[in-house]
Length: 377
Image 1 (cartoon, rainbow, N blue to C red):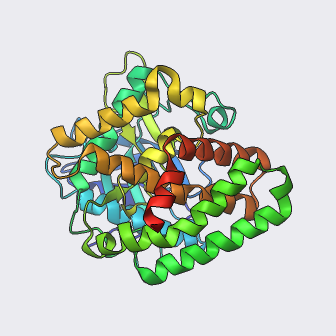
Image 2 (image 1 turned 180 degrees about the horizontal axis):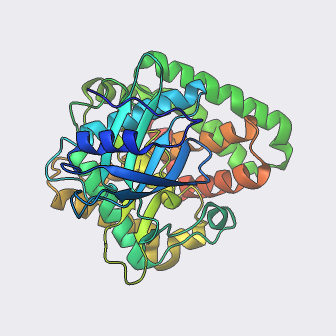
């Protein structure tokens, strides 16, 4: 029997939390006697931190600090909550446990009401983000090399565990709507073209000429990329894995100095879907890093090599370095239109313009124009 979602307007009660923890198997004895709740600044969910006290007969290792997410009422937030719950429910069945995920003590979605909840360990005392959103936007969002290696390892292990998983494309864990099938790709292409025209009309005169020509070339090539490189692959779900869907560096939590927990975690799977493995990598390395940051000590290529080596080490075969590079170039071609969407949907220029500039420079560095020409031949 599932535990109903506590109403957004109500605090989490000791009774509700006792029932949730019992169903998760972490509170075999005793009960929650009090819950202190403090707000979290998340804008895409109703999230809060819980400080928990138990009765004297409770198991001694019952979690004292918890984090609960409940969906907002908007339709997009209901869908996002369903995706995240589905992700954690499937992940909970995997063995060995996925160590890059914060321990989860329950996840539930009610299809009738649209309500969802997710209960996690609160690791805010032991972990912190390697960079902030503001640092990324300011062009200073490069974590330490040790943190980057741990982030790449965590992402590769996640992707390897979900590689061609039968849950991809089912339930709430659908394949990316950009190219799930022909109908979705056609809708994506239409939206990209409309947004690109709108941006050109409003800001085109101030966009660099090279970015303008790159955008036109990318738009013209996407039908060929779909027909030659994606259509059959999406139908077969070949070399697809789970994609975080919003995999910026700020979505990771790295251990603080002297933390007793040395895991690197990835959080916030509201956009989880089946996708190219390189899509998350483009979010990480190309969306806000300047050419100088990507090229310093060969950072971008070196991290991509580390990622591919980790995939192989974790059992992925038949997906070589060349395949990863091609996927990275495909992901860049699609991701060029992400900041265009931002620009035409109300984002401030100081947010979308650095993204577009960085992605355009990465597309040129990875010879995406050559890819555009080759698929059209």
